[in-house]
Image (cartoon, rainbow, N blue to C red; front, side):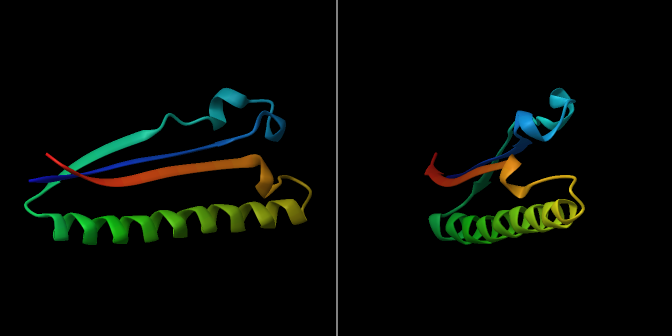
Length: 87
């Protein structure tokens, strides 16, 4: 048995907003069991691709706001980790 564990979080730096508490999200931690290592690694690869895409979309949206003088993509912090671990 294998366990896929991933952690994802994002927040804005304090310079980005006066309402700091509203923009800081607690990390999400998720565990999912797989019957073998190959299935776990396939899920890991898919998930990592999705998380990269999510980060790119978030930064793209901030680029649009930056053009309006409202935000800067450098102010967002995106973090994730995906691991397959034997149970």
